[in-house]
Length: 370
Image 1: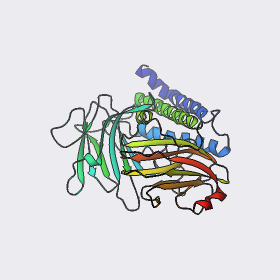
Image 2 (image 1 turned 90 degrees about the vertical axis):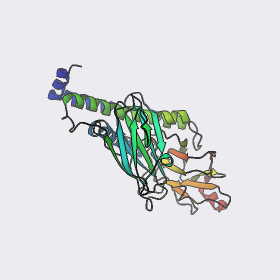
Image 3 (image 1 turned 135 degrees about the vertical axis):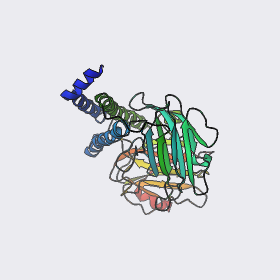
Image 4 (image 1 turned 45 degrees about the horizontal axis):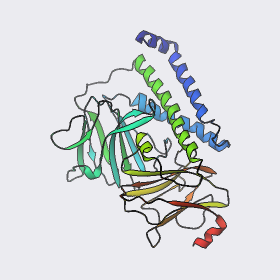
């Protein structure tokens, strides 16, 4: 579309009307036939769209200029995507693979820290393909924990390097905590090398492009993970190994092995998730999500247990208990008022991942397990 045509759409307000129409259409993902029809799930679904919109506007409007990148969080306590990890601090920056960048900061003490460059996006092809990856174990650090990491197509003569391709358009950082109360997050800053002095003023063309991408992000992200949830419904109360290639294709960390499933429990039932022998790994956790694959509200409910917080048995195994009421056993996970939803287990850095087993039991029978 010609620039003068776009300017006219902005002047008349048509660009805003089109944006709102596309958001209205995204609501159809919440009304899909297979989705639960209770008022809570519907309410959370429509709230989910508003959360996706907040993320989309940060990603495609406020922090969209790759010449002046900045970190923002694409998943956090009140905005969540695709089984967001409650133990993570996610940071995201937009890039242009034709440019070069520097990330500088201090390592901190988080249990796990990784950097990945990506191409694609949920707003376009529904994929986020990795183009480069490095984790903290590979970083050269100064004595005080400080470091610099160069992002470029060509490897520099020395120092830390993260590969870009010409089509790379984003950097995702994962900081994973065993215990947020004790660990210090990495302090990070990103800048383009040889950048211009000032960003250009917002133009009609850039607003048009940004709103279009934001609307596509909302609808495509909602559809993608509604499709996933629909697939998990076929095996309720199981936790199978996920399609790892698919997980990687939508932006997963290559050091992580993912398990995804669907749970549904009556008031008098509990779901036991058991691992006979927890593997040696950097980190692991299990989290409970709603139908839309948002982690439940971990600010107020115990919906996640990890390598630090879970209690192992005397043989190095673990049993996690999901139920509506506290059974008085170790490793209880709350449904937080939900009758059904999705859940996720991840092993990080495990050479030999161990598959969990699951079974549903009556709450009254749990006392026999003590």
